[in-house]
Figure 1 (cartoon, rainbow, N blue to C red):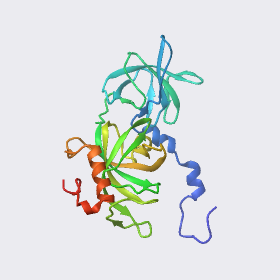
Figure 2: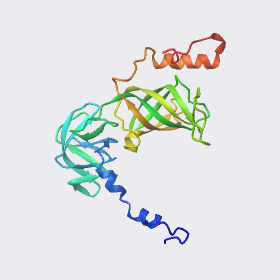
Figure 3: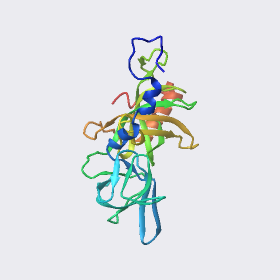
Figure 4: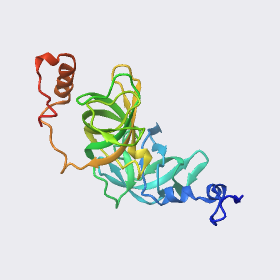
Amino acid sequence: SQSESMPWYSGPTLLEVLETVEIQRVVDAQPMRFPVQYVNRPNLDFRGYAGTLASGRVEVGQRVKVLPSGVESNVARIVTFDGDREEAFAGEAITLVLTDEIDISRGDLLLAADEALPAVQSASVDVVWMAEQPLSPGQSYDIKIAGKKTRARVDGIRYQVDINNLTQREVENLPLNGIGLVDLTFDEPLVLDRYQQNPVTGGLIFIDRLSNVTVGAGMVHEPVSQATAAPSEFSAFELELNALVRRHFPHWGARDLLGDK
């Protein structure tokens, strides 16, 4: 109810806002994003692509495009637990059957055919680090984003956020519980959205390659197009070895390969 302590406020109460806000309509109005979680082929007569519609809507007959291959096809069926549907909306678990036999794998992304979403191999990512071992430039981790698993290299740490006053400060590594903006390069081109635009295709986790433990979470701040991404003359192994030598054998005087770029 309205508070007597705020006679100057004539708007709706917090409870009224929460009860009337139309979140689903906003998600449905966004561009279609369908990350493939599983290729369902129980027999020779059926081939479907299962997953949860991350945003937008899809309908039978719609022209869709598969990324990163760029191959196009039409939606022949939308299969659900309750039977076939003519259309589906964001948040629903569905299986799409296409009119063409296309090579689609787990981690591929389906979207409207008339939409352009270029694959990128670099991105700046807001990271929350959750491991005792700090995140440092030159390290490589497995990452998972919208069902796609690949590897990423830490090119650099732009800054760490001081949670006490929200200021940004330069650091050499990101410690446990640290929050910062990190530059990543992926082993293969990925189709990404900014996290603010789509949390499913813009959110990722870091996985330690030896222990298989999740060590961090990330939100894509800005994908870097191939045209603006600076090529690296060093391999991921060389950068990781360089960081290891500089950290444990500083008396060797090894130069920073990233810093000298």
